[in-house]
Amino acid sequence: MILVVAEYAGGKLGKSTLEMVTAARESGREGPITLLVLGQGVTDVATEAAAVADQVLVGDLGALAQYNPEVWAAAVAQIAREGEASTVLIGGSRSGREYAPRVAVKLDAPYLEDVIKLSAEGDALRAQRYTFLARVTETVEASGPVIVATVKPGSFAPAAPAGEAGEQYDIELNLPTPRTEITGKSVEKSSRVALSEAEVIVTGGRGVGSPENFAQFVEGLADNIGAGVGATRAVVDAGWRPYAEQVGQTGKTVQPKAYIALGVSGAVQHLSGMGKSKNIIAINKDAEAPIFKVADYGIVGDVSQIVPALIAASKK
Amino acid sequence: MKILTLVRQVPDAEARVKVSGDRVDLEGTTLVIDGMDEYGVEEALRLREGNANVEEIVALAVGPKKVEDALRTALAMGVDRAIHIETDERFDAVSLSKIVAQVAQSEGTDLILLGGQEADWDSQALGAASAERLGWPQLTWTNELNADGETLTGRHDVDDGNEGFKVALPAVITAQQGLNEPRYPTLPNIMKAKKKELRKDDLGGFGVQPAVKYVGAEIQTRARLNKMIDGKDPQAAAEQLLDLLRNEAKVLA
Ligand SMILES: Cc1cc2nc3c(=O)[nH]c(=O)nc-3n(C[C@H](O)[C@H](O)[C@H](O)COP(=O)(O)OP(=O)(O)OC[C@H]3O[C@@H](n4cnc5c(N)ncnc54)[C@H](O)[C@@H]3O)c2cc1C
Image (cartoon, rainbow over all chains, first blue to last red; front, side):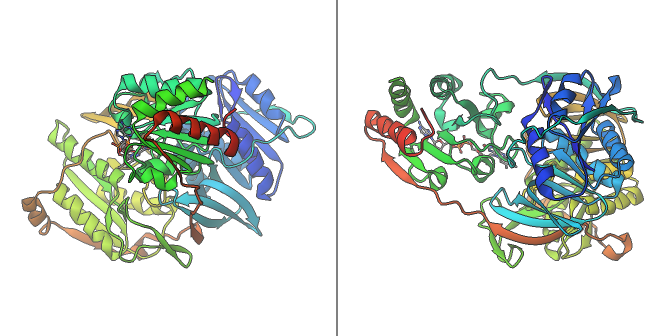
């Protein structure tokens, strides 16, 4: 079987799960597509999962109420072993890329990380992935009775339901006791469209000037055109914006239809997170700013003059 | 405690990348210690300078001859000694973790510090895979770390925000920006570092083969329109941009 570990949030199956199902279908690897749903109170998620999978394995347990890499790795490896999985697909989220290597070690399997394309080459699985701050696309290959891979969010089209819903089965798991104690959590919430889902993103950089200007220009424009809000690391480090909005190497990777960068210099670490956007629009007062090299449309000008004009004009 | 810090060497972020054959060609490229690993080295030094009881800090690198420079940087920052396992072969992180685990065991390490993400190959796997081989817990994307006896506390980023944690040694911690500001090696420390031990271990002794084959590499080029709009008249520029976004790019209604 091809084992896909479902990702979900707020009681709903994540888009990344549907993307992984497509990756599984396209991979040409052996076996039925099996979704594994781990957590507590995941009945609805499992039902959603059944619509796109051949079968759904449900581990609905108190011990899974809180994500922990050791616990997740043990659960996934156990099911992969018992089901003689040929392939294990895990989301390329922060948590996925954290526990997937442990699964690979447990299964003594090769590990293909953060892949954007998958295809079977005889016994082997061939994958593409980005390297060198997303400036290079690398092709890698691994073979073995089982291969573990993480799938980069946004790289595959979300799968549509396939015919009959798959059967659901409850599973028994032998789980280790987590050794890490979580002493407090702060969740970063945003009232706007999630960056991973937004078709248009307006991102502010340090050139915007201040947190007040950020609210006025970046959020102002975004709300006017129904866009998500992003930020550079410089802005996040300065405490103007929450980390959840950071785009780049150590933040989120996004691929909207339009990415509007206001007062963003275009450092390589930022480009690696947004360089695959379909259209890039940049407003920067420095004509030499590197962001213009990757822009489809650019205005050399001051954010505080251009953006109010844009907001006014977009209301028309 | 005994700390092992892992050190990689990567092209300077601003360096141009070129591909020849099936991989990125680093000939003539300026190489530096991977910035995220540098946070790990710095944190090890700060734990010792704080009130943690740190017996020894060892830096480990697996890679070509040139990686010595990155190890010298770590030594000059204040690491006590270094181990270099020389190879031109590229090891995927999960295979490499076999070496890391063996070194950690033979050195009696109880804390491994390394960067959360590799600036060249973009892998986040080495810390987790090493932790699994050793049977240790791991904390990734750490941006605050404190030690009290055998207990570590701190904060780290997770999918939807960040959390405080508490864990007992031994453990693997991956570092990221925000954890600290790495120090620059001073000239006297660079001189002192020359006298510190840089041991060469033989790859053959570890019995490790890469599990991933590197088939090809291609530079990403995506043609961009590069249409520049004159911003001198903000009103006119804004109207022109909106027109292009609505009617040419068709990304706005
Ligand atoms: C390991 C590592 C990881 C990193 N990860 C990330 C990441 O995930 N995301 C990220 O963004 N960065 C990341 N960085 C940081 C990155 O290198 C840059 O420092 C950062 O992106 C710069 O942010 P900025 O463009 O907002 O600020 P700056 O570089 O300060 O640029 C501000 C820009 O605004 C322009 N400007 C100023 N005033 C105005 C005005 N009034 N109107 C119009 N334009 C104006 C300036 O010309 C300039 O181009 C990382 C760095 C490292 C070392």
